[in-house]
Length: 273
Image 1 (cartoon, helix red, strand yellow):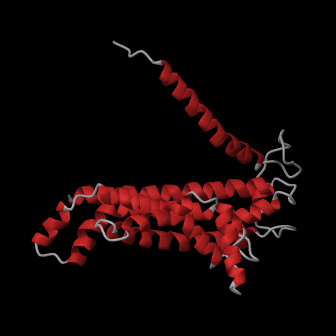
Image 2 (cartoon, rainbow, N blue to C red):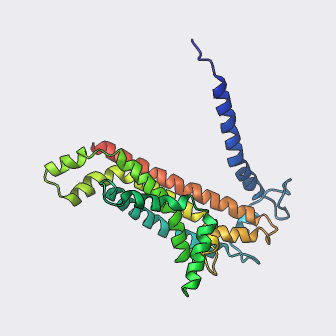
Image 3 (tube, one colour):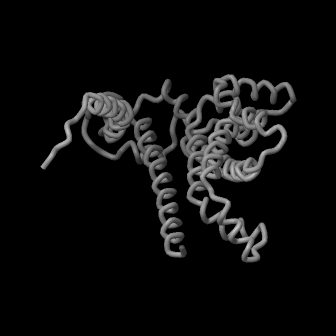
């Protein structure tokens, strides 16, 4: 058998990938392990016993921090951002399939927030709300701040999807007598549904763990990232690690559910084609 000789570039890329994995999953692994400290355990190694004590402690009343309420706010805000991101990104993708006056300016205005520091956007929105006599809140000012982060990504994804989308399918549907709505409902939407799920997942996860754009816009009530940050200076038990483990598992669960739905849609589409 002929074995292809590995090049120097292959080993460089392999080393880079291993370092990337180490930096990504090393801290997560440490937090996961330390969350299973015994009842008398601390915030550092070595482990002082092994138990799930701190996971049960999450559901008890805490001297500092409100896990449940901050999680519900982050989850609700993430769902709100996800819905708006999917709808607006889809409409933008459909609109930009045809050239119109000012499309270039509108496109760059949409994605401009990606290059502006997040803390500047957060500060600016907070100041505008205060000067307007409005009270910043996670469901209003923070909601708008998160959309400045998720919408550009969603729009760019839908642009890429529609750039690869052949109009021949729509033309065939119209030749068979389908209306514009029927063509969209029965032809376009099923084909781009996996991409829309990806946009929704992207929007939810970006909002769920956003810190900088929430810092000056959340008002009196913290979202989960702000709550965790505030607890890092006050909480001295592994309950903080338990919270990190639970939220990480929740994020992975959301991703797996979205991937499962996408796989089901692709199988259904393959059966009908």
